[in-house]
Length: 127
Length: 321
Image 1: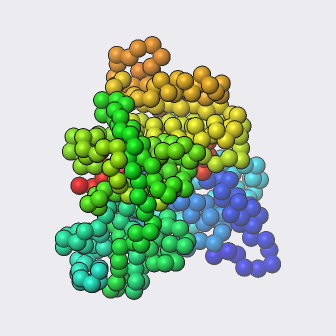
Image 2: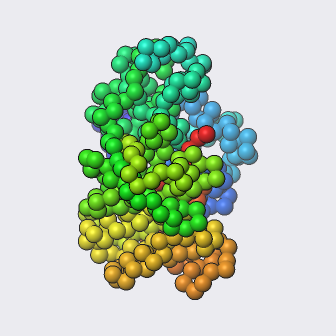
Image 3: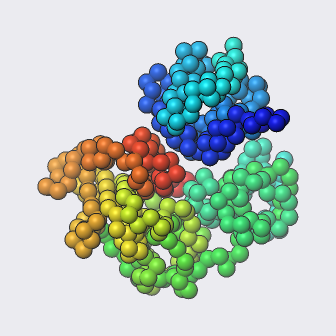
């Protein structure tokens, strides 16, 4: 859920859903072009993949999302069976950082996004 | 287990079975084609009961409100009473001309009465008198008197063989509403357009290209048509003539297997596009034809810089037997 409080949320600081829209193509292109991780993203259904990337970006930006730890675990279980490990997770976060950097997001905010993404590590890796 | 009342007869669905599968399994007659929710041939109307949201995906608001749903995508939680969609949704059409344009493709022209509204590149479902239904993309422009479809003739294709061998000018069929979102939208006349497809994927692309030019598109319009061998190419003369008339229209035919005369490239369609345009940033793309090639091309065009939202496509799903 979005942050509650007087402080502007990370999601709003990044630009909300417009920022997600701006980032999704760049991010998806980067992970598809990254030989370390592309096989985990090379779904035949591009629309479904883009929808998944949007959900992920919304979550990492601290925006409203419906993820629970259990969802994360079951969604990534088939990928873990295919060999998904911590190195892959780090590569995705790296590409996320590059995406934001390309969009002109300041390093301090990128670090916050990476920190939000990191909270899902255990669930994603089914550790 | 849901019970379906269809025209007064009760049909019980098995667990997880779609309304279409359940009705067909028990011998009911329902027009249908792709069975994947794309063609809208199996649209029925619910008179009572709850329709799952996914069964109404892609239908117009006005149709949803009247309880129309796609039988192939409908796995209801409870009982339903349903009926054939209002036949007013269909119009009669008379076949006016059927001609071979390649060893495997026929060009079918027909005149709907009254005329139907459509965008070139959308598709319509053609329904034979006995209910056999297939969807085809529209290659003509609304201002032309006849609707033009390109039909690939498969050895066991019931509709294609009938159209090619038995149907005659003057034969009547029915047409559903035009649907699909793969068509030209004015508003950015200078944007470069890339149209790519295989086989009869040329039909919508031919419609979209001519529609764009007719609406005054000034940016370059590139049409890449790929085929297995040169017998799979067709309308080459018409497309060459179109590029003579419009200096911003370019036609690039290619075949996977040679030989091919000069002017026809040999190789994969995607490779030809890649070598012509390493970067497609800022382009709009239309991709039509075989589902695997469409999926491959979409990804390739996306990686070359086309925004995901700027890629329109139509995968030609084979009709289920």
